[in-house]
Image (cartoon, each protein chain N blue to C red):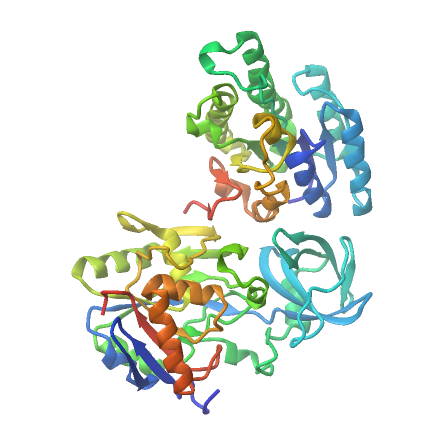
Length: 325
Length: 239
């Protein structure tokens, strides 16, 4: 984090032609009346659990909820030391008095396991959980992992793009005639993305999402008026592109495994407000689908040259789709 | 979801994966297939799960065999999940519909359409008690109109319609029915369908595990009547 305030971060705006540098607090003035922001209203869970195993004390990061007692989970040596760990099917991990049985590995992503819990995960997280964090950041208090839009618990990593939006900024946006509506997409762990460097080979697991009727209507009305729709976060893009049809966005819920890779045509949004992501991730693949690979590469060089801060507590980036700005 | 599961065609391929997943879930399970050796292998493989696994070899087109299966699920509790997975590809190599043996066609329909519906009819008392779920395994051949897939495809198209109809009819009794297209997989059946061809680019049936995990986490009554693609990018829950 740069300073004490959430909005004390920088904002790079990338259009088709150029990159420009602002303070995040200038965001309302960079958008136009009639534009619409779409935020992810999923709240973050304390999904990292201490576990005792045959291999000693490890961490079990819950990733994806199928049922309260069935999760996709990532066993790690520690927050900074990933797996895969030499674990076997039917192996039992102890979380306090509770047991987690590792059932099978996720197809194509061997570091993720289907795990059956003998105690509801919600209870284990309440008692033992802490936020999932990696080597580049310590574990902050849970409230640091929520945005002002977080309403529905379910993500294991913060949908962080809206983090710098303060209540004041929200009011400023609304008073300028810029709408804000929500979707819900519960994020899983992001750590697996370092496994395969070729985006085509990346297996992605599905994530639970919901695009409410009111949100679908607001997006379609914005586009009908010629306004721009800005996704706040890549999770929003994933949800909206899943809900997209040639007739517009429809209300929709379930699990989405949609992977937006470079070359995918992005229909639902005109801009993306997001953080700065590691060069080899599905996030970056999505950015390339929106603005073009060369354009994103140039913007990232610009961000590096200007010492932008990376990751979920870092700086922000507003990227316009080709032809949208 | 608690209660007993019944998986047909569980001796290999997709059925074996579904049975393995359900046993891992802690579900008591009755499995059936025509080849006893394969079925007993699966039962043995599932022993480590601390659940009851009962293999009953036989042919689901045989009414006496179906009775045995449902007596067993009753003896273990009550059936709450019926997976109609056993399927017959038909003549190999796959003939054009215009030239196909009608006698052989009828056998395919018996296995792929009539027997699953019979199992559903006969298990209604148990499914009603548990507010259970029926999963009928379909195929993209049911919608494709691909050449030489007319026998298998039309049996699965009919099963899809039966699933949707049953979902509507059984809704008042709180019994749910879905249809699942597992997608192309590296299985014996797929190899039989593409005799002599290299199918090593197809994923193993384990690729469907995430879908089964998702499916068992859903409220059956909210998804009844849906048709899912296990390898698809969207598994929708209707509003």
